Image (cartoon, rainbow over all chains, first blue to last red; front, side, top):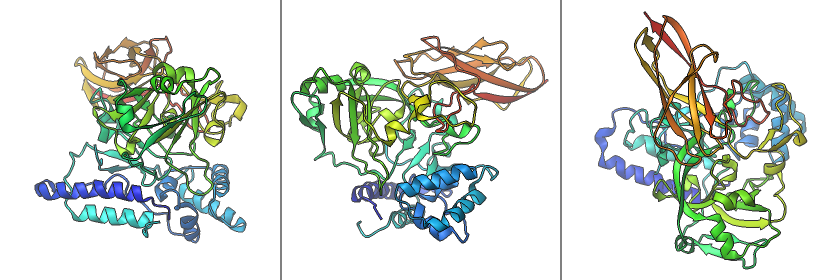
Length: 123
Length: 375
């Protein structure tokens, strides 16, 4: 995957700094803190198309990006076509099934997405 | 690269955090995360109106893809194109130039996308993809003067170090030279601190009054040119309808033009859920615009038939937001809906409804809040 060294180094520094702070102030830990900013918060839902969706979509963005959408069949079809154009690998004969999977879980009638609290990092 | 996948890294990071008793922030001090990678996270609505200046760590984060953070020690800003003397300026070179500062709003063009109906695809920002900060650096016009800007240049092409994966088009942008020479800043400080990595360190563009797509992060090249940049992020994305249409009906490219100046907008950031007849209940909010200042904010309890003026906060700067408050005096028991409406210094008035567009830009409908009034 295309994780850049600089990104890893920078976040390593952020998290390393937080660890030191944590040791300095352990009494602050009364409840589970929210995850630090940049933590992947959810997976794509189970289903026959999950492996394909995982490999086609998660190279460039987390599952969260998909989980927050509530799109019609027409909109999902357009999104999949756009992403295939941008390099997502989805065999032609599986595109309809992928769109159906996305529509089932992330269609206009699914429950509203709620963003999750994340702990700020850095200053 | 580096032998660890993005997901593996994040899981390891999350595991380390959970195991290590991180210091707990006060419960309200948090961001609302939409996307784990690239990071997209907004400031909670109730925190937006608490302070005139948005703290750096609570400022919304919007990345198009996993960024490649430049090394400030070796970083240089290339200035080429229609100039007499192409330059490569180090951070030290920039810091040796005369400083300029601006306190102004940075708002993502897609802030409020989640509120458009019908629903549109994209990061589902609600209210908090906006913040007000003091940006310090050097004037773009000083840098261009140093390089000797040629007469034929009309657009400033801008480039950052973040590179897209696969065949995704690069985030290359341009904006009108007239605007960026007027008040554009190449900023290396944010609220008095070095610009954070998440916000484009070592330097980013600041374009007061204009949407965030012009504020190139991790800036490493500016290039004056006779014509505008082309590509997906100019010709397809970041465009807004010239005239409103029917909600849900997609606009064609020639029916749209690039998003530039922000639209006049207010938000209600704090309101009591309950109030009593005859007792004042204070609501608070923010207001800003692509015009240099907000002239007034008004509040209505009858759906916009009658309005009463809110009190504007004393802090203001060109293209910054104004805090406002309104002491509402309920006259009757029952559910009351209050709406707010900002008017800017050019006379533009916040509309009851936003203009629907397929990319979900510039949502600015009247904000509303419901208060339960008892006798």
